[in-house]
Image (cartoon, rainbow, N blue to C red):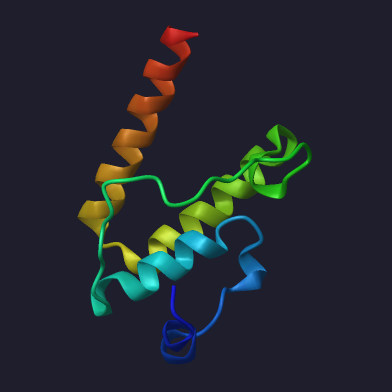
Length: 96
């Protein structure tokens, strides 16, 4: 991402702890042009004890996620997201 995006839309909202990147994407998405690559351009690793993936912080992280969604999504979109989260949770349990 180019620096001018941060200059125009602001930096990460560090008060969110685990959903600050999601907040940034939703903030800039409707006002920027995106280019998608049909190839892998980066890798990342989730380290042990990472805030966003720590199972002990699941409820807290979900609260931050919902806070971000309420900032940018309408009522219908929130309903769809909630449905898909429930569905994915249900399907994920049946695959384990």
